[in-house]
Each structure stands twice: as C-alpha cells, then as structure tokens.
Image (cartoon, rainbow, N blue to C red; front, side, top):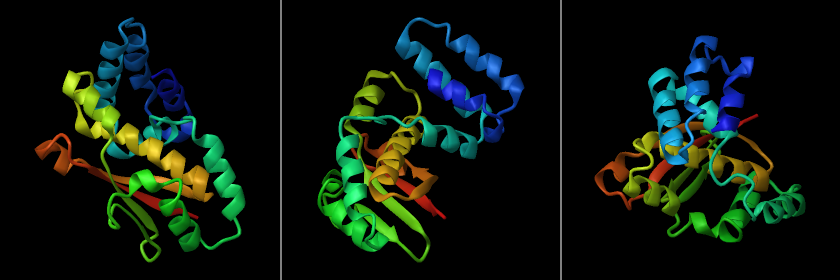
Length: 184
C-alpha cells in the first residue's frame, strides 16, 4: 500500500491533495490485513474508477514475481516479430496460464485491446477469508499485475480499460474479465 500511496502523490495522477491524509492515516495501522482492506475501501470511496485503474496499473499484485527474467528474455527474443505473432507465441508458451480455452486471452487489433478471462487463486483466498471486501478492488489490483506481465513480455504499453467481476459475484471461483487498451 505504501507504493500505491506514493503513486497517488504524483501530480500526474490527479488525486486531490485533500485525500492524501486519509490514506496516510490508514498507513499507521499495524495489522496488514486491516490496513490493506481499509486502504482499498478508501480508494473505492474517494477515487474514480479511472484513478483506481491508474494506481493499480502501476502497483498491481504479482509484480516483480520470479518470472520476470523469463518475460524479459521472451521480449528480447521476439521483439522483431509483429504483435499478433508475438502474442500467439506468448499465449502458447510462457502465457499458457492465461489459456484454458482459446477464448481466455484475445488480442483484437481492430479495437486495440487484449481481453483476459482470469481466475486469481490468491484473490479467492483473500476474498474467502474476508481480507478484501471488494471484488472490483481486489481484481483491479490483479489486473494491474496481468498488465505488468503482458507489457514486459510483449514489449507494448497497455492501460486498464475495464475490470468486469460480474461472473465472480455469482460464483467466487468464476473468472473475471480484464480488458486492456493498447497504447501507442
């Protein structure tokens, strides 16, 4: 949460300065689960969806995980291939975890988007234990992690366009849908 707070302080993210003390006060809470839940709830209460997407894009969960070396090597090896080809190779190799069926991760060059149907096992654990009270916020952070992985491996810039948790609300084990916009 500290990195999210630091991101909020950057002028480019347009977070009103009057909101910052709310988040700074939460950072004093010593119990991590309580602090994280209050921080997330406060983000949802005071920030717009777009502001949350911006913060999550910079501080998504699972960033810097042990697969970064593999993603960087992939990006280097395939950087001269067209995006559609890089994407197909990614999905069928190191991105195989995104794909249990062909429609789970889709590149649409016409709309310049990548859509992922994704079920986060860690998120389910947190939600079942009541650590996070919001599907949107928890999976928004998860979307930030997927964005990071895709950008690193594919060598493109992305922006979170949508986090659809409709299916998860009906069945906690169902996947949510992340839509990323390809930014030129």
